[in-house]
Image 1 (tube, rainbow, N blue to C red):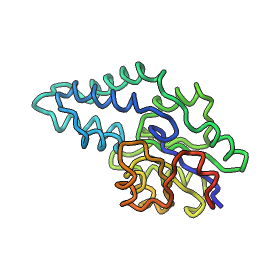
Image 2 (cartoon, one colour; image 1 turned 60 degrees about the vertical axis):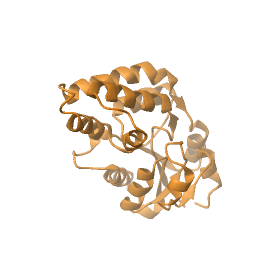
Image 3 (cartoon, rainbow, N blue to C red; image 1 turned 90 degrees about the horizontal axis):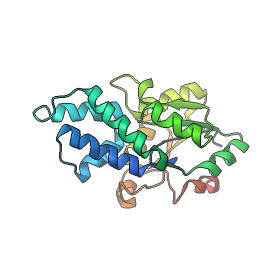
Image 4 (cartoon, rainbow, N blue to C red; image 1 turned 90 degrees about the vertical axis):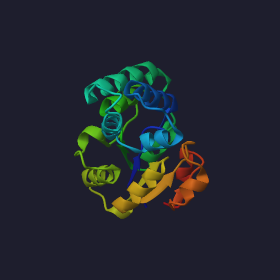
Length: 211
C-alpha cells in the first residue's frame, strides 16, 4: 500500500493551462522567439529556471536583457492569470489524508507560484519541493528523490502523479511508479510509449487503483 503520493502542480493538481500558455507566449515575445508546439511541450517539461536560461541562450542576437528581466515577465503573467487557476484535487487530497496517505508537491515551478494558490484553496501538503530547492544541474527525478527522503519512506511506498512524458521519465528514473492524467499537451498514445504504470481519466481514479 502506498504511504505517500507525490503530485505535480501545473496541469495536474491545478488547472493552470492559461498561465502556462500565456507565460510561454510572453517569454517568447520578450526574448524574440517564435512560439511552436515543440517549444511549449519542452517549456511544460522543464524547470522554470531552466526555461528562462534556455530563452536567454537561444536568443542572444534578439534578446539583450537578463534572466532577471525574463523572470519579471513571468511574475507579471502569473499575477495576471493566477485568479484563473483552478484546484482540481480537493476531493482526492482530502480522501487520501483520511486514509493516512502523506501528500507531497513536486514541481518544476517556483514556490511563489504554488504557495499563493495553495493558501487560497487551503491545499494541505506535507512536503513541497520546487525549483528553488534544487541545484542548477538537478532535474525532476532529483526533486522526487528529495521529497522521498524528506518523507522517509521506501520507494516502493511512493508514487508520482503528473501529466507530462517527463513526469513518467522522472518517476522511473527516481525508482517509483508513475500515474499520468493527460492534460492535452501530449496525446494518450504518445504518453503510453513511455510506459506509465497507470493512465488515469481524472485524479479521483487514484482511489480506485490497487495500491
